[in-house]
Image 1 (cartoon, rainbow, N blue to C red):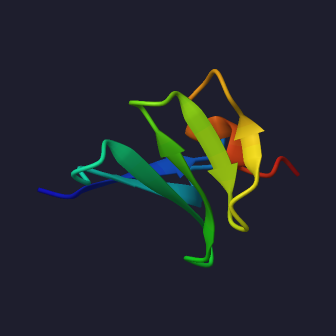
Image 2 (tube, rainbow, N blue to C red):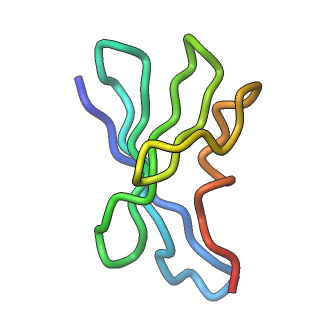
Length: 69
């Protein structure tokens, strides 16, 4: 079952969403415009950006994909 969570900034504005529950233990991260910013994988502990390039090889942290303003 897919589950969607939201990440909000200090003013409660939605800045990203994370969809989990995929069969391969990955999560999809989207920005506030619903554009995919990347994917994390808990099994392999990796984080990839929207073009598939590795962002981290030892952490499945979706926070690495959220652009800070």
